[in-house]
Structure formats: structure tokens, C-alpha cells
Image 1 (cartoon, rainbow, N blue to C red):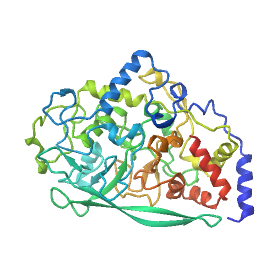
Image 2 (cartoon, helix red, strand yellow; image 1 turned 90 degrees about the vertical axis):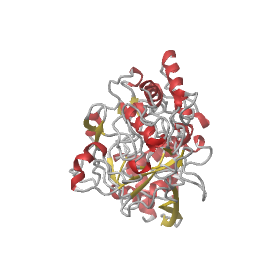
Image 3 (cartoon, rainbow, N blue to C red; image 1 turned 90 degrees about the horizontal axis):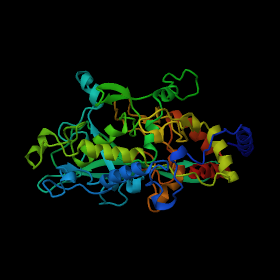
Image 4 (cartoon, rainbow, N blue to C red; image 1 turned 120 degrees about the vertical axis):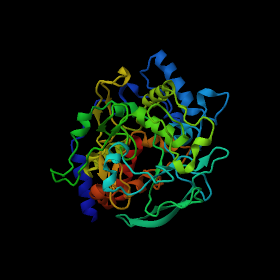
Length: 461
């Protein structure tokens, strides 16, 4: 973009009417916390009652404390494994924030997992209706790189990176890294050659109950699967199996919106990440070929309904921290650049939550910056692994609230996108493609000054 055109973009974007939002400094409405620093993501919703805060603390204890191998004197938290990725939820969701890929060769991928599946055939259609994917026959639906004594870990995630570069208007060169996944030391023989791999870091936990409280109608109104308005954005909802209601419903949680609600999301994590069964998932990810039934406690339900409900209450009521620096002119200008570039087409700024089982979460004006819909993000981000209706190029729009706290919560360094490939917010933007290609090119064509303001806005969230 020529300098005069870049200046024109800034003038046009700053002349756009600023959205009138009720109180965007409180992105979680009355649930918002004023906590800052490393524990900004670990606070209860501010409008919880004293009794509810006690329930929150109980859930936090099960979320934070490790599970152990059965049999044990700690019978409320025994039954770990035999195969697992971690022994505590907090190990992946570090301080209730996002995970990260292995940072050095030989590091354990403790806050990253790898989904496994094989291509479906016509014979799998009925199975796909309730499971969403066809698991690898021996290794199941998730690589579990740890095991209890006497069991064999499934393998080790190895990530190599291929460098790619993007040149920005003004001449700066940004180096991106494209992850290439390998499975080392497979413990049960080679994986099928056509196995599909998808690496996922743990997402932040804040505001999940508020996202759950958005009415389906308010999400579905944004669907435009055929791009009928011609704006290049064709978001669509995932439809997934609800194991409680025994029917197909709207998906909204997970990187591809593969889970309908937090209770099922948590039960799935207990089963896949820690090898713990519940009423919703009566079996973990072990397959017949791995002979997990020979270990003590096999066939027992390790996660009681009481524990699952406690963890679900906790995950529903983690508060979103208040925004910062909103009066900074750079932040205000950056917000208008964000909207002018079309980023708000997918990162929908605001919703009013509906009536929820928790009055704390009901009728709250919130600012998550997501539409909870699937979008084609281009070949660069594609994992080529379908999940229910999501295809191999589609991802659910992640919420942006809390971005400005990500590095603080992570201890100084945060990673972005589904597999943590992006080491900065600018890298994350530059990986956008597909439906977001036009927005990305707009950012590339901005002046350095404009990009700095756009990033200032994102860091204010």
C-alpha cells in the first residue's frame, strides 16, 4: 500500500462511528474482576455469593490438585490413567491460562495434546453422528504420552518448525514458524499411515460460563454458510452430540467447537487427558489393543457426579479481568482499525447473555470478541482433520478477552493460536488466511504506526 493510501485508511477508519458499548471496561459484566498480574485469570466471578464462593473453592481444589494411581488413600482423586497426558487440570491450563508447545527439544508436551483420527468412510456415518471423528484403531483419539507404572506411554510428540516470512508495508520482515508434527517412540507399534494429527494447546479458562450463557439464537444469527451477503465471511455452527440429552446440538467449546457445554467438555478432558471415567464417558481413551483392563480399578467410575459438578461450577465462574488502557488514544484508534479491517466480522465484540441456570451469568452484557462459529482459516492453519461438521481448514473463532494479560499469567511469555505456533499477537494475525485473508492483507498494508495502534488495542483486552 502506498503511503498516501495508508494515511487514507487511517483517516477513514478513525472517521467511522465508534461503537457505543455499555461498559466495555467490564468485559464480563458484573462478573468482571479487577485482579491483575499472574493470578488475573484465577478469580471467581465478582458477583458470586459467599456460599457460591465456597463451591468455587471446592471446584478449584479438584481442578488444581493432582490425581493419583489407584488404589490410594486419597480415594476422592484416585484412578489416574493407565494412560494420560497430565495428572491435574491446572498443569495444562497454567494459572487458568493458555498452554504452550514444548519449548526445547526433549521437553514434555504437558500443556499441549495431539488429537488423532483416521479418514472416515461411508460406513462410519452413524458413528460420526455421536463421536465426531474415527479414532486411530490402536492409539485412540488422543496421543497420551505418560503412563502409570506397568503401562507403556503411547509415544512422544516431536515438533519441527519450518520458517516462513511475511514482509510488511515499510519493509519489516516477520518470521513465522510452521509446525511439523511427528510421533516418536510409539509404544504400541506404528500408527496407521493415514493418521491425522492435530496439536492443540490448552485454551484460557476465563469467561467460559458467560459463553455458555449466550443463547443459541444469538450465535446462529451470525451464520452465513453460503456467504449470501458476499462479504467473504461464511461462518457456520458446528453441530455435535450431547451425551446427556442424547441429541445433536450447537457446539461451542473446543478449538473446533466440538463440545456442547462445559460439563461434557470437562468430562471429556477427564477421560482423554487423565484417563478418568465419569457418568458421561464411562471409558477412557484406552483401546482393546492396549489392554488397560489389567490395572487396578479398571471399569470403575473415578469421577463422581459430585466432583464433575464441582469442577464444572469452577470452570463456569472464572472471571474475566477488566480491560486496561482504554482511555489511551492509541487503543481507541486501534479499535477503529480493528473494525475497519473487518476483524469484527468474526470476532463479534458483544453479546447479552440469556437466562442461565446460574443467575450470576444471566443477562450480562459481555465483550468476548468471538462469534463461536467455524471459519475457513486457510491452508496455513489447516490441520486437515475434520471434527463433526468442522472440516480440516475450519476453526472456531477464539475469544479475545484477556489477551493483554496472557503473558503475565503465563509467567512472561505467551503463545497463540490453536497450536501455539505464534509467539506474538502480530504473528497470530499474520497466520490468518481463508476468510480472514482480506483482513490480514489490510494489516500487512498498514503503516508501522497503525499496526502499533492495532496491537495496543488487542493488548488492552
